[in-house]
Image 1 (cartoon, rainbow, N blue to C red):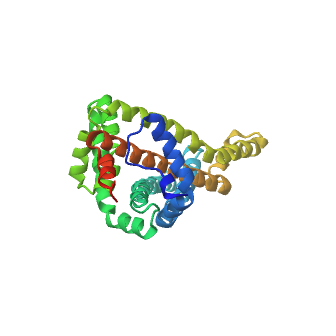
Image 2 (cartoon, helix red, strand yellow):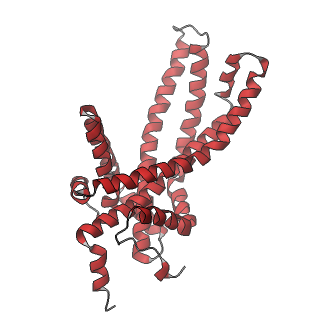
Image 3 (cartoon, one colour):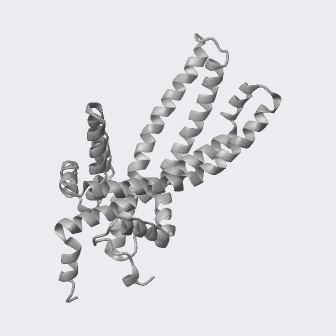
Length: 294
């Protein structure tokens, strides 16, 4: 691909252009993009997969012991249920780490792509590791702000979620502090909330449709296996599906595959960020003017 044919992020775009260029970027760079994600997130994804397997097995065991006839005072049943809570909590923490890492790799990939015309793996990895705790702090603060807004009323939380959707991009491309990033979210989205909301709604719908592709094998297996397990006529046999190894593996693959598709949202958020930045500050236009003589 010629350098002149590459996508220019630093320009204004309407809703249709943001969506089409998001998928064009993935189509043209998917091999290196997902290889970067695999290399950097691979170990954490394996930990998440392991925790999910233990969680499914513990839940199945707890379900059979507590809900299918084991006495409520059975210490074994409650011990298994405690394992479910423990694995569940650890899994939430691991998924938060994966979410943050996925956002960082996606955005630093784009940052490197803009700087060099092609993303450099060592640069992306170095930026990801160097800024990990800043992004964790930002993610926790955004969750706290949205949660507090939700406690008071639903609409403020809805508004806050759209505003803070720019946070990861601002921190990646401008290197601001956590507080500076939050402040810039509000100033950047001012007068553009509805446009941003429209793009996010359309993208959420598209990503949801794409995510369904990963759930099809698991859903088909459950339908087939359910018929097999119920063949004997006992409805409680359906519980055997809970700890069926094939069903568990398909569930894990489905969940991880669906989660990785959130990278599409991060790429789109980069286009939204540069669109709003261009409208307010004309950064890309000024750069092109400065480079006319080069």
